[in-house]
Image: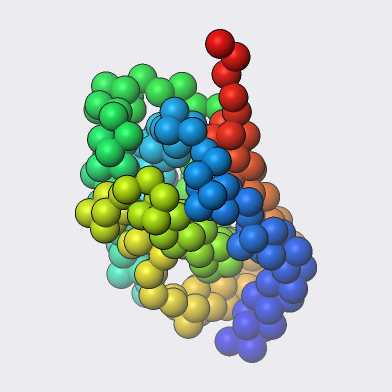
Length: 225
């Protein structure tokens, strides 16, 4: 596992700047200060509703592609974890006055949906090693901001734990580092190029930041009377 562990370490170092930017992203802080309009808050469940439905299909494809590997349970777990997402997102939407029809009709922005597009591309085209490394490095940053956002919503906008369950679940994701590194090592042994693993992971992180940037822009945008 030494080659995979070293590669993951190197990629983490390469992406340290964007990871720091993600973990200090101003959007959760803007929520904590009450600077995000109630209408602007709807952008989060509005986008995530469509992202989650797309990611469900993507993760089902991953399970189908990689079911014959020793890590079937890992890919199954990724899918199972996503299955609860639409329901949790709907609860956030309901707290903000959004119906299921509102979520279905919500028009996502390209910036807000780019991550889901990358996930769909990876599910169809990337190796298991590329995806495992990308998720290993991406999920903690996503979960960290979900935790920040959940606390801010409870403190400032009257959300309860029942409303932030979607966010809290991602904030509390257990580590899967050993499994991911094993999958990366298997990929390297099978000839997957390290540059492909680096590239796929970098794109996931870039689109992750693009999502939060979009939420900040939509959440703090003021409409003229």
